[in-house]
Length: 185
Image: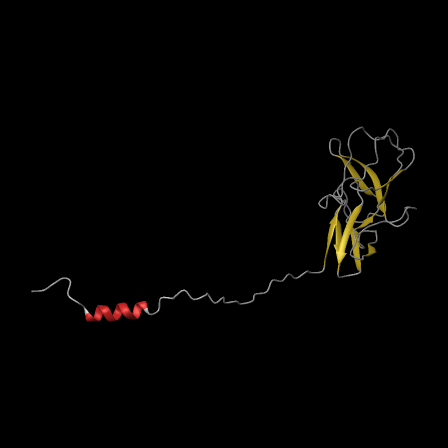
């Protein structure tokens, strides 16, 4: 007679060998392996219009004008045209200004603000110095670049602007231009 409960010698051997690798109540042995965490800081600059807004320089505004019989001077301010720059690595960086959206070629006679409703222009200029004698450009457009000595701290670079006098009374409206600042380091 065959019994379903008869001993199986092979099964018993397997069971014994399996039970022998089951851990007992021994304390666990921790296993450790180190790994590294790193970051590489590249030489670079953060460029912006103010300490709270690094994405926009704001606008240089000549204000409300009723006459251009004489030139109008203004100076940039924080979030109003002043360039803020913070660089690491290179102590000297070069700031360049393009000719603007309404001008091609040489800017020595002035950049142009456009009244998009009438197509009329007002001439203006951006300078590197308060006497308004050093035109700020890109080195090839009639103006020169400006070299800034950086030290890793946030620095403010002031722009000096002048709206040129005109013999003709301009048409009322808003006159705009957009300049591009390029930093080389």
